[in-house]
Image (cartoon, rainbow, N blue to C red):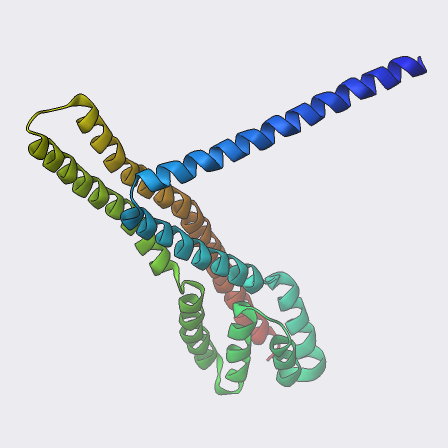
Length: 235
């Protein structure tokens, strides 16, 4: 029984090692293919499209980190503000908001800061500062949208220029060679493929960021209404 278990272990270990080696070789081959196709497409337009990908991903990662840090447990914050208003008044509630990060806490602070001027001023302050916070949440999204549109356009431009080069080669050769035409068209189309891949990658991040912003904004609006109700109940 023990010998059989050892034999099975050896077989499984060998199989795993072979699979890991095969996966590593496949990964290396994939990288080599990508590198080769990138060079075939021409460094001019392919480099610009790659720059769009790098800048777009950098902005997307920065926004993801910022939005995750901006996410607040509004229900918990509302309970803390309500308890602070009952025990220590407006100043205690403002201190709670000051020690809590995120746009919801900032809006609460602005509303509480105008609480002595009446509920109408509180609502105006919340609406005005909510617009400011919404602008901060959406900061950089327009650039990601630009790169999404720009990457395939640059790819198409590279394709058109490549096609023009292929027809120039045909004109210089004086005849239509299948290998000459096919090679030129293949190189030209690589920029379009790469541009579309970049646009698709960035589009996924963009849609995620938009949904995240919408979620935070909805939470801000709902929490602001509840804050006004709390202020009414504690007058």
